[in-house]
Amino acid sequence: MKKNLAGPILFFSILFLTCSLPAMQKSRFYSQKLNKSVEVVKDEIVVVYKQGTTKAQKKGMLSKMNHQNKGGLEKFNAEVVTLSDNMSVETALEYYSHQPEVEFAEPNYIRKMFVIPNDTSYNSQWGVKKIDCPSAWEITKASWSVKVAIIDTGINYLHPDLAGSVDTSLGYDFVNDDSDAMDDNGHGTHVAGIISAMTNNNRGVAGVSWGARLIPIKALDNEGSGASIAISSCVPYAVDAGAKVINMSLGGEMLSNLERIAIDYAYNNGVICIAAAGNFADDGDPTNDFVMFPAALPHAIAVGASDSENQRAGFSNYGSELDIMAPGVEIYSTVPPTNPGGLGNDSMDIWHSDGYEYSDGTSMASPFVAGVVALIFSYEPNATFASVYEKITSTAIDLDTPGKDLYTGYGLINAASAVGYTVPAVVKESVAVNSPNPFNPANGQTTRIYLSDNLKGVSLTVRIYNLAGQQVRTIEPDYPTSAEWDGKNDTGELVSDGVYLYVAETDKGKVKGKLMIAR
Image (tube, rainbow, N blue to C red; front, side, top):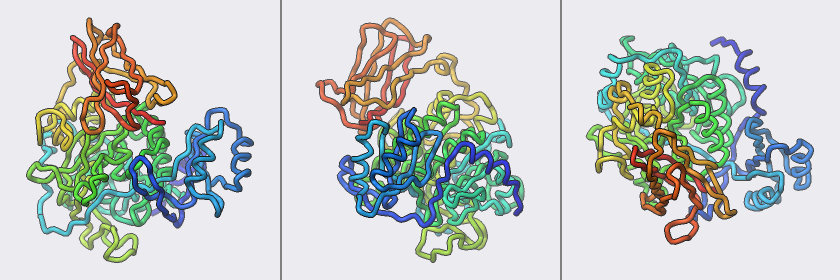
């Protein structure tokens, strides 16, 4: 397939340094926070420099330790540093973290797709019906002007049910460092079909937002693994390519501050990031049950998986950061017609000679939500993160206790109700902004929550909750226009690092938000 490559290559070279990841080798890194080891790229770390750091200063730091700059993400002043043979990741992090020119250093974490292969003979596309897409399509059909970026293993853009939906001129492969984001695993193709498989073409399956334009961005290799630096590079690439929605059916256990910066960049540019919560709730290890990253980040929408009986899938991760549920069991969608990665039958490749296959996972749930958000943008092009979030959460169908709960968030997304929902003016304008976010209370730093004018009343109460849904602090400031939090609980002790939820309530209404403590 001949493509016009000049545009995307020029676009890429202006904004990014080369960040190719051939033959990625993996190792284990012990996380004190999780009290166990996690998978990282071997002999590499990610270093983010402070603004104003010169090339000579960076080179000097690397030369002193006999390290090499492998490339990185220039937009965020980040580099991938290759370590010398005799230095561990732990030692390198200690060294760079104490350099005055360094903002932070972290391992190059491994991110993986969240899929469970499923060969069931279940013979209907139940998910589209369960969230009432047909009624949503009576209101609006997705427009080619709405771009949805899929950060994944790539997309098989030759698939007959996807060929009219994928804009290959905007795609990029961050694994092999070229502009051909062809899928060599099958996972990304399955995700793409859920979002925007061609409909009314007498073939295959119906995408939630058929008609939307898909941007294929390859961050995961043929084994379904990728590095956090690649994910962090893909997000701003998608934003700058004009995406309104980004789907990430992938993740990992550890917070990457660089991924947080990337997703904040999307948020600040009006782009909605949707991410899978994770598939480890039934693996026998309770330390894996929490919402994975990047889904757990404050400016990402975290999606869990439900089945055809409106029950949470046993594998679906949960916690206070879970926002919404969507179908994720026995999901039928597009796949390559031949084994794309050649890894053998015991691999995680997804393919079938018919070009369609069933799979389970929060990887399948996330694109349902991305598709609904694309429909919202088709109907309301000027929608904001706040209004989209209000639409999908206010109209969700409760699956557990009324309102938001730890196991199913706000409930099952409903496409028709979300698209047709008119956000009340007071809600649409009611916002709370907390700054700085994240903040480090260990250094005496605080964060302040500011209310929009229409929420300001005669009183203000802010309640802060941890990941387990437990209230850790109540703040009732003297002046009901903003509230300051010092990172301490009600007994005066500093709380641990992580993401927290807050609810700010006045006599005129309330608003919710997320904030993060990072030391």
